[in-house]
Image (cartoon, rainbow, N blue to C red; front, side, top):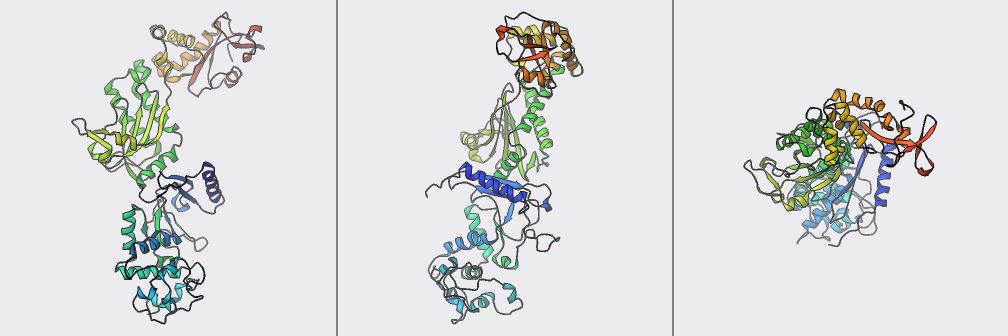
Amino acid sequence: MSNTVPWTPNALADLRECLDLMTADGTVPGGVIAHGTFDSEPGYLASGVVAPECGDARPGPGTVYDVASLTKVLATWPLVGTSLMDGFTLDTPIRELLTGIPTEAPGGQMTVRQVLAHTSGLRADTRLDQYRNRPEPLAELICGEDLIAEPGAGHRYINRGFILLGLALAHYRCRRLDELAAELWQHLGMASTTYGPVPRSAQVAPTEQRLTGGPRLWGMPHDDNAALLGATFTRSTKASEDTDFHAVIHELERQDPVGLRMAAILVEAMHRVIDGPRTGRFHLGQISALERSSLHAITANLIQNEFDFPDGHPTDFLVAGVQVRYCFSTIQGWGIPASAMNQICLLVEVGEEGRHWNMGIVRATPEHLGPSGNRDGKRHPSATGVSAVRWLHREAKLPISVMADLPAATLENITSHKNAQVRIERLFRSVQGSPIDRQTIVALARSVIHGERRARESRDRLTSQGILLLTHHDDQLISDLQLPALGPSQWLSIRVVRMQRHHGSTPSTLLAGEPWCVARLQDPVEELPIRRY
């Protein structure tokens, strides 16, 4: 089979805009567009909500939709293809595939090919309601109607022929149409496609609202004629895809598109284990192997609470209603327990010193796992398994204490003094122009309560040395001097001097009405003209 042409970014952007507009103006409550090629991983565009009846539930690859008239494509067409044999060809008249159809019945003469091509000549209006309480079989009633055109004479979209063809398939194959279709879909890997009705849930999109103010149809055929066509429902994934796998990916990407929430979770977990105020440590490279092992439970708990994932059965948590096993690693790789075999695993890894992190999804099939590596039977992903991981974040940066990169002599000079206030001031004198996080300050002060206070007190004590201590509240000074932006829990120190001619066009700010700029190494120390800034 030849490769199909992938969707261009501009075309996908246009599709996204159309879907967003449809949800914004109330045409539909929400929807999913599945896109891709025959030989590539599918992608998904989603917008809005599943339906008002489902609250804030967002649609995704796992949402079930009524495919309505596409039942012809998903069921009738492929079933005809698998039924072609002696006695059942595209040119076989319908009356030969059914019993009880009189030779003179107008509709009995049309062929399978003419039904598929919408050239049967049957009535265009479906109107099956008029046959209620009639004793004759439905196929006989449809074939007995007068034709509006000679079969094959011209194209006109007609549902009646497909209803008749479905009855013919079931009769010829001696099995119900839904059984034939289920067998076909299973063979194609379309395990999430089924005939209705389906149970109501937030994973099933309601369809039509027949009466204003009344409830919409939910999990059932959208009209009487569709009921006779079988009302096929499907998820928005292509054949042979692992729908649970993609549902998990979609939910994680929906809740945390660029990984900010997960990064915050990992930072919080590391701070708990590093425990700077008590231990005086600054980064992950300073903790023991035993402490590293506790990060699995800490991060799992934080992830579940942050994203509101329900408890799993029997362990870990559910993502988009799917059981997910959580695996965390720092330097030893992921150990996947035997009980997770064939389950979806969420893999999270933090680098040895805590500078970066990775997150991906893989299904723990036998071919994705190596041999048992330890006494508890845990197995690491094989080379095949690693290549099968769907990475959501790779080498994403994490904030690390400035102390991790200081020369040994500088680090010793800062940390060796017994007085916490002196240690804090030595830090601000030694590390200038780079943000310093609160955790570093409280670790150096060995006190959560007094760390921030000692930093504030350093402002006055360092004015004699021309050093500004800035926080995010000092946004004007930061902007004037073109310094790095600060977060709510960060500090930055910088030595400044009065602007001189040799400073040229160096960025400056006004202090006590005079221009001041960032000092060069050769500039002499000047006391700040103000203590409050």
